[in-house]
Length: 383
Image 1 (cartoon, one colour):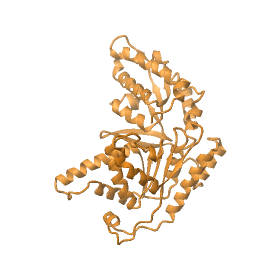
Image 2 (cartoon, helix red, strand yellow):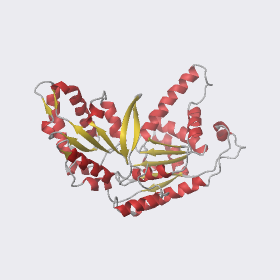
Image 3 (cartoon, one colour):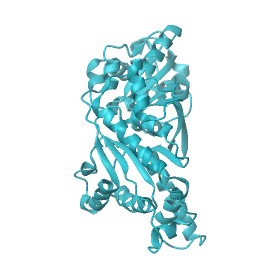
Image 4 (tube, one colour):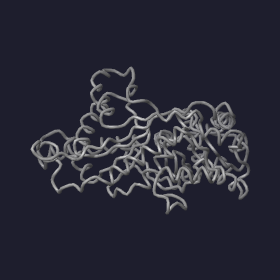
């Protein structure tokens, strides 16, 4: 959802409006990506309506006319260069009704869940024994004509082989894919075991998608954080207002949206997110039964986290303290940038002399101090 831009219908027009408002500085590399995204939207708007026929007919009946081929976009570049911000604009402005956007890790978890369900149906005789990717591709292609991914990556050979089969079917069905990534396609799964097995898939990405390097020289998120106080004390209206101003600056004035992350069948609601940045309250992350794997899921999805309303804790709230310890450890280990509003300085947040949390919190306090330093903020994000 865009803020006060209802009369602006292109990525470039919205981008120029943001520059005019002072939300960001004009960057030639970002402008080129914006133009390419607008060109893709224009191509899609001219596409002929698709005849009503099954995916299998579209995929395997060579006598039928194949879907019009339109190349998607693969936008890659270093962290903080504006990839997600441009994707936000493109996706929100796209008139395509059958569109879907997902963090790539989220998408892959969903695919693995679907494969499990299809195999159960095959075992039960509910559907015929065949490659489970076929009905999954059929379902996706019937509901989605534009598929957008944030943080496209390949981490293991099993996923790589699966992606080759799935994307092949989706491309044949005319699904247009737009994604952002930190690496050029040729470096996906670099030095991975049996990487030669997925080279055809990597080649297909370059054939089916225009590859654009967003080589902006500046990490704009870091520029916003540089010199800013990212550990705000106390937790009152004044520091909350400071957080809101920093949020607006880092999200370029775009309106936030809500998402749900999935982790092992559980839902993690994220009420405010924009441009790979998320806002949480202490209650949302530490007063609810979340564990280390949930925090890791958050760390993989966002490169900057705003955390509101951290209270002082004591032994009676040791469960919340333990979750907070796990949260900070995970964000720290994954180099996630943290803007935090707290009731006290790090060393005074946990007041207790008994229990393991008292000793563990010394490490947490030390990490919180380091996470507000320029050296930590300038380090390259893992995600």
